[in-house]
Length: 135
Image (cartoon, rainbow, N blue to C red; front, side, top):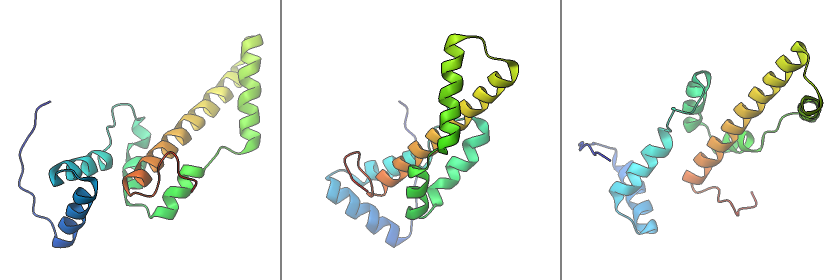
């Protein structure tokens, strides 16, 4: 991995928070800042182009909005339809309309999963979530 050096001027308050986090984690402040940037500037290689802006904007959401995104689910009726079409597809070829509907439901499910994963990643970065938390 190649590294680039930069000089970064930041407000004293931001520096103090980064320094406290580094001390608490017993890690160099440079690593903490780099990890924070990495989390905020998530890789977009595997993200559908139509979601890049939405996921980037989530970085600025308040905690409660991130919790809502993390807990969001597809409505039960749509979940049932997704399961039914998936089972039907295992038994027979789907009609064109069914195939289109299944594709749309899968896309919706995938996008929601990506939003949830990103919300949990941001909450974890903020120290508000760990995989074992009960929040």
